[in-house]
Figure (cartoon, rainbow, N blue to C red):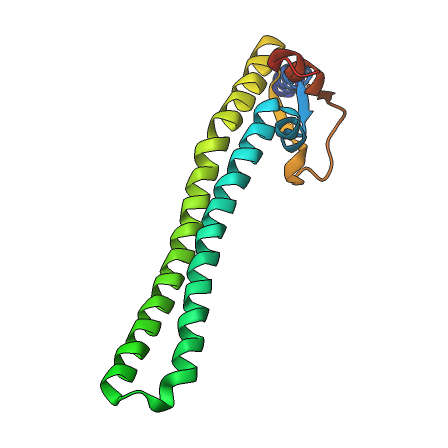
Length: 169
């Protein structure tokens, strides 16, 4: 009696597990490729490039100023009184420090600008993927651009659905 009850319980559990496994629906998308296809990405790329070029232009101006002052100092250093030489050396050191500070600030500014420009694009793509997943009853959507899926059972590529949702041809 106990054996038949255990067998019946095992059979019910196996049927439930099989039914559960059959209801799972998997999909995948290359989000990196999707982001590159979005027209907003080209605009963001262009804006970030212009921003970086303006910072680079300022840095080049500061570097030219530093080089000019350094050459002037080096050519006249031997004939300068000690007080003037010390002042000029301090000016060069201060300008060098300002250049280093500017480089660090510029890198931080570029990163902040990148987040500002690409954040809405990433959100729009993520929202479209989630909408498609809910609409089509997917249990999981894997991002193949991350390269973390080494093996997977057959799944649906939802790229065409998301591209349609976002109006990308």
